[in-house]
Amino acid sequence: MDCPFCGKEMKEGRIPANQQLKWYDNTVDTVMGEGVPLSGRFRTAEAYYCPDCRQIILPVPEVESVLEMMERKLSAVGGKLEAAQKQWETRKSQTKEQKKKKDFGSKDPWEL
Image: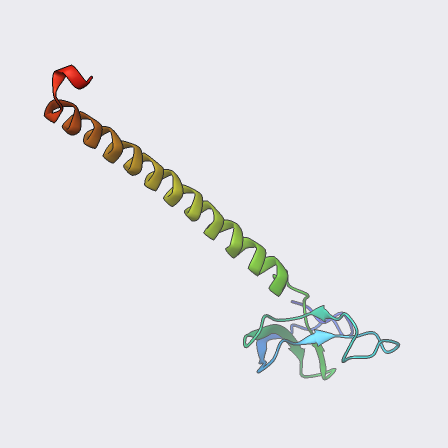
């Protein structure tokens, strides 16, 4: 990537983060405000550094929010639960049919 200030080639690197890196507008409280995520939790942010200008550029990645991640995981679990429920209902009806057939042969024919 070329530096937008001097036009020279920038060095590619990363910035490690113990927490999620976010950018906040100066008018917003950083504790309560919504920031723009620059990295995922406990990940690194991709960055470009120009040694001549001493500038760093951080591209804003597509970071999945906690809510989006939880919704994705819950929908996957919901699908698995539905499949397990259908399988259980199928087994239950098969067991019921087998018992019915078994009991049918053991009854007195005059009781039917």
